[in-house]
Image (cartoon, rainbow, N blue to C red; front, side, top):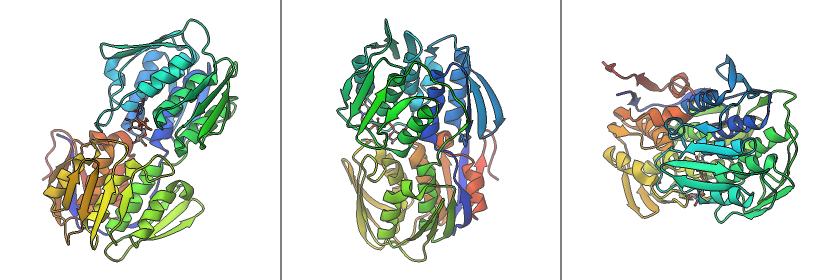
Length: 425
Ligand code: UD1
């Protein structure tokens, strides 16, 4: 089985360059389907979720020219099919963006139900509500989603019942080429939503308000890309390295990031006693003592991101007292705490709350990466622990972090990737 072996304890020192944002890229790639022509993308993260998306788009008829591992030109002139196989879409969650993008262009769309991290129930009722309000007919059966329309989608007013990143992006994708004006209220405000809207606007879309509670989209006839588009840096990858630097009592410059996007993480780290210095496109994180205990309540942006809570738990697990994590987004996000307990952490979970009391040390152990961010947390736990930590199910981590081993090695970590069939001795 492929795995990571981490030998701790480590003190991370140096500079790390942050890659393009996964959650923006997985929206921008399907958004290119709205263009009957070529799109040139830069700062594309080299991660397995993107490779899965390339395979899907190529299976639909896209031609992709891979300029280098972070830059490509995608030509969607000859998309022949709007039917994406279950095998491909079930590998990751963001495949549901195909629905919004393909509905903008075709009358009959069919995809397998999206997969992705196992974080508990992941309903798509708000996505369905959006498509139906815009005039499409949606049918979910036999593990597939069928979407159809008889004429152009029609602009309308939509109020989301829950603040959903995915439903907001799907609404933007579906409404961009719709007839008339769409107003979506109670939308998500994450930086990647703004990036996807900026990408579409750079090609002639008319989307206003991304990053606020209300988005207004005036449908346009067609889109056309005139210059290349560079995807924003990954907020969660940057946050992961910030926490890794703090937890290992290190000194790390996190380069090529947008400090404004990191504010909820920066504020919490400062509360824990970590020094965070913000400059134009970098943050410098330094720590030389035990963290002060803190509490986190995960919330939609600009609240504390759920995708950063497992990583922050490692800092809390070694803090000088007791803190609390309340998870308000995903019901199964605390699976990783069982792995930390194996390593010597003192964590009590009840419902959506974890009470974490700092211990003096964590000890290396065999652990599982239950999901993408839990996997990142396991790496940080391995870095701070004494001895050897063996992390399995790392396919989750590889879905969303580019060259994670190389980046940690450069900061002085002792980490190696063992491929399937290899032994670690
Ligand atoms: C996205 C991110 C994921 C992050 C999450 C919350 C991507 C590819 N993934 O996931 O990393 O953890 O935002 O920041 O960007 N909900 C419904 N009905 C729906 C849709 C969502 O009830 O139709 C609920 C979910 O169960 C969850 C909450 O809304 O409790 C937020 O989910 P959502 O923002 O949609 O998450 P994703 O877009 O799947």
